Amino acid sequence: MGRMNAPFADSAVEAARAAVGLPAGARVIAAMSGGVDSTVTAALLARAGYDVVGVTLQLYDHGAAIQKKGACCAGQDIHDARSAAEVIGIPHYVLDYESRFKQQVIEDFADAYLRGETPVPCIRCNQTVKFRDLLDVARDLGAEAMATGHYVRRELGAAGPELRRAADPARDQSYFLFATTAEQLDYLRFPLGGLPKPEVRRVAAELGLAIADKPDSQDICFVPEGRYTTVIDRLRPQGAEPGEIVHLDGRVLGRHEGVTRYTIGQRRGLNVAVGDPLFVVRIDADGRRVIVGPREALRTSAVRLKEINWLDAAPPADRPVLARVRSTAEPTVATMTGELVTFAEPEYGVSPGQACVLYAPEAPDRVLGGGFIEATVGAAI
Image 1 (tube, one colour):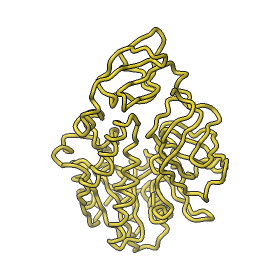
Image 2: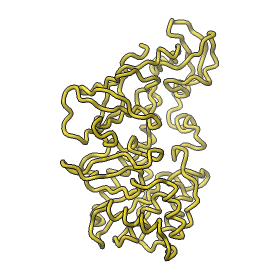
Image 3: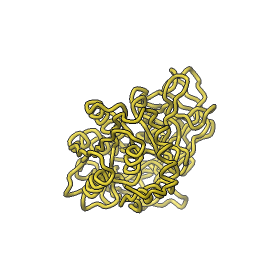
Image 4: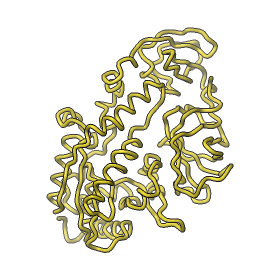
């Protein structure tokens, strides 16, 4: 596998060996989605001398999946993972997780939109199917660790393993992994966390892997062509029931074709006008009303969290934090008191259902924990 002269690969192998931190010969499960990142992870572990077993999850029907290109865990991706394992020279298994994925991720996704929330299904998938169920399988297979292609770093601190942002900020996926527990982090490894994506592709090419030029997945894997309403309409048709679009001042401005078509902060596609720009500021799912108003009504001074996962020591009262309310935003100064995170400067367009991920001000790349946003404070009521 690969050419003899492979400087990028050789350097990446050493980085992978350091990230795993186990003696050569130790069994490591490599979660293989069929994409570049997870394939390179498996290849680097094999090169580093580990007893690597590749595992791929079938998360939904092959027939439907094959029709959708560019999505993780689709039919073509399973084929790519199997082919890559043969090239790397490692055993490979495909596990049918279709039913549990539907229950734990897709159904949760549809229900969240029905409640007027904005869910983050990739977090749920990592939290349940991948980092809970798959870890159990890895232990059953006698592995000492499980490695994934996520762009985050795991570093040993004074109190044990810490979760840190990737070295390449453009690829950092720590927002999507805040729900990883301390016990799971003790078992997980992330060999690509210190590498930029272009170097990962160069490593794939040097190792002769056919997926070196495979495009990255852009969409939610179970959402065809990015149209999430297609999934919701099939699972929760009541979400498409019509209702009123109402201004904050009480005026009825128009009608809509279902609350699941709207998200907090949305401006386009409202098809109503009052002269000034309007935004969705609240969704009354029970009353089937979409509440709109000016951008100022989106100001959020604080959020209340649920399902909090804390990787640091127990949070004291008034703990200074850096808070990140969306994956594309940089963390901002805030304070955590119990379940409440108060921002030093208001955030805009924050929606229940999103995640609020917290980092340490004294070490801004270290994940302290986070939670799902249950309610906002300071938004329109």
